[in-house]
Amino acid sequence: MRAITTSIIIAITFIGGAYLITKNSGDDNSAVKQNNVSIVDGKQIIEISARGGYSPRKSYAKAGIPTIIRFSTRGTFDCSSAVRIPSMNISKNLPQTGSVDIDIGSQQNKILQGICGMGMYPFEIDFQS
Image (cartoon, rainbow, N blue to C red):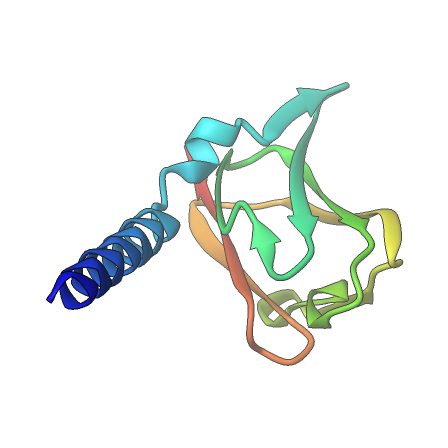
């Protein structure tokens, strides 16, 4: 009887932990918390890490400012090392380790969506006035 009770407690602990991890992983406010957008010499730079997907998955930027997306990689061997922004006809292979700047010009109020080479990992940038 004691073994069954212990097994049930362990199972509940694992299920609860998995629930908490998945509940927090879909938080779109992570872009705001990370503060990955800066303005340098009149250009807006959006920094996105590419490894096992893109982080942050959603960024908030200002519309109407010349913009560069800076993708940083660090030992990236998965499909997030090939980035695509279909609406702008952009397709770029990223190095395994390093950074690549993609100049996307000035954007209006819109959401720009990007994806990895295999279509598994999305990201988006919400341009607001």
